[in-house]
Length: 362
Ligand code: MRU
Image 1 (cartoon, helix red, strand yellow):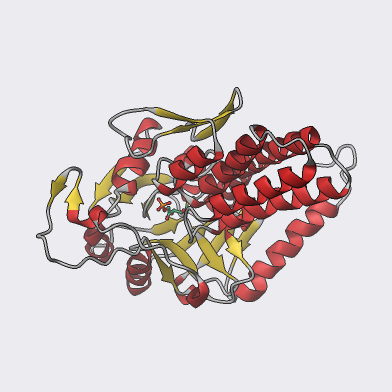
Image 2: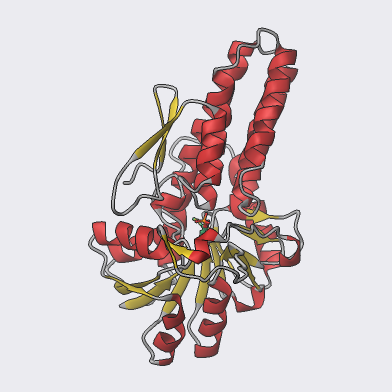
């Protein structure tokens, strides 16, 4: 499995996703500032991976703190959390991971932990966030494979794979699990303008595993559906509102509209950490605007004339009416989502609360 982000000798190591597939280069972040920069410059991207990187960034940053007293340590901890929170606004996993780190910090500080104990607990929590994400992706794959038709021709948009998570992937987790069961005839990857996550990253992941992959320009998905060339669509998410509206990579909304028009089931695969129960609907999701250069240039070459204005929202919101199901690690939610997503959280809470007895399969 691809090493998206790892903790090695107290350094956060990430494969530089801007350079894939041409070069496999690893970036070593020794400070929280370096991790924050890696997130905002897209060395690492994808909602769950951003959350994991931020947690590790906080842990690595606080490990280097020279503070001797807990009061000064707390000041630095809050500054480090603020630094991470300023990196990318849409992926809610970032804020979820920071909240988890704050929760652990608060509980440990209240219990009177020393600075060294606090450092150790932050590091442990970052590792837990990483490991839980891999497990969640595997479970998403397991649930998602059950709704993939036999001999499916599947479309995905952007990259919601191992590279976008701690490993295995969400939408690509579903595709991987279905492929392992022999259910996948073909995968079509939208190239995903302007950053080309589909062409560069999704195709790279799938080809490495021998899953038959065809890259198409984003504008080709509609005609492909019209020709009857697709049976199933699965994408990831950066943030899902309480009513099931889904923010994901720009272009997802168009794919969902096309899928609805052509009767192709459109599914979203995401861990519960991507569901933002505090945001009632998609209108409350902040959409990141990225640099005009992503549109005006192809690599170093300028393709848009000087003087043309550029609009470059990194994400769009797909209304819940277009989504057939939301595949999570605890099961698949169906409309109406306000109720079904809440029920999945209840199920997850009671699974955590349930005592594990010997012989239990969990
Ligand atoms: O701008 P990016 O590359 O971070 O956007 C990533 C996406 O939109 C993914 O589809 C989403 O984060 C889900 S990743 C499992």
